[in-house]
Image (cartoon, rainbow, N blue to C red; front, side):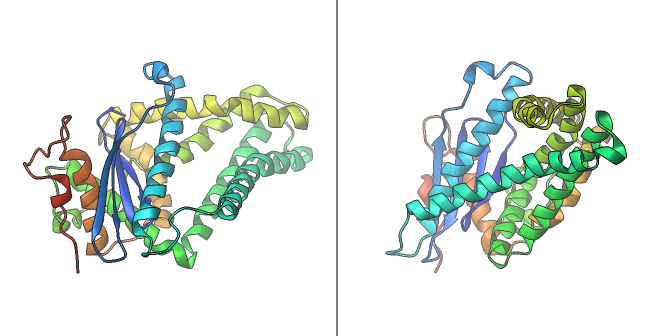
Length: 304
């Protein structure tokens, strides 16, 4: 996973794209115009950037922090005039409870499920495999349920737009909308692949722990989470280094399949927003001047 690869995520009526410590974002305002931003993030655990396994933990922390910052920015920019632009304390509490609930489900339910099957399959490796399969089934079910929510469709479309624009950019210069449409809304370097790989690696790592009392089993899962993240990151780096080879395609296949739940085909206006985000990131040099010779604000004309 080279340092100069471009990644990103869908936002509230927008898209964020990132390369290294810089990220650009674009969001559709209520009046139809497009807001853009280019920001530099302070990366977590900078001293571990060259340390295998540990750098994966830092990369995940960075992705979450930058993603939340970009999401908050897009929320403000896309809000109706006069509408509150910051989440209330109640909204933050609800989000916190939802996140805690999801984490608890993915952490505790598989362990409890494997323990319940212990009389049939025993403990040790078989139990770890069963635990991993339960966790994977929960993940797939979560994505499926999420994709069916009425209010989530536009976010999935922006996710697809992000993938299409990045794929087109990786095949040449700054893409037009028509050029982006030549590419799939599914991308082999999506975060879905990373989480899928984490679940697969966790089966092997947790199996090495062996049979433990339930409490210690849960503690070991929490303690080994950074290890599974770090190993998964290194595997992704190896796969990314093979480009479009057999290894890279094989590793990407499961994630591409799951992106049926996390992406949708966008319309031209959404691709335009994704293109604006990419332009904000790649068209600005280190001094803040547009490589093409125009101010960033003028690169995207307001609509209607």
